[in-house]
Length: 64
View 1 (cartoon, rainbow, N blue to C red):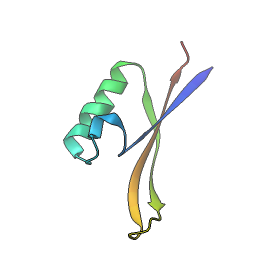
View 2 (spheres, rainbow, N blue to C red):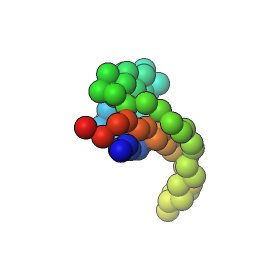
View 3 (cartoon, helix red, strand yellow):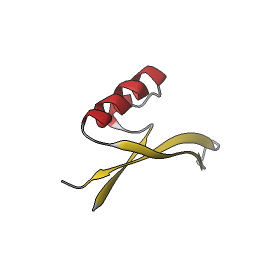
View 4 (tube, rainbow, N blue to C red):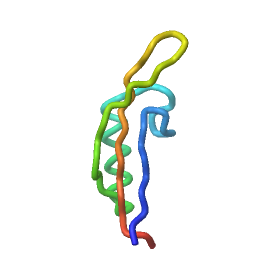
């Protein structure tokens, strides 16, 4: 059985700001826990101040 995790720019690793170095650290940290990336997408998020793009990463691992 598999379990899944969705990582976005709102994840605790980014503290509200997207930073490619922090993304790399987060992905390496999750990889050390057995997670692997299975999909990456950009979501179009509408808001009152205008739409924005958000990175979405889907990861999976064997359920423990």
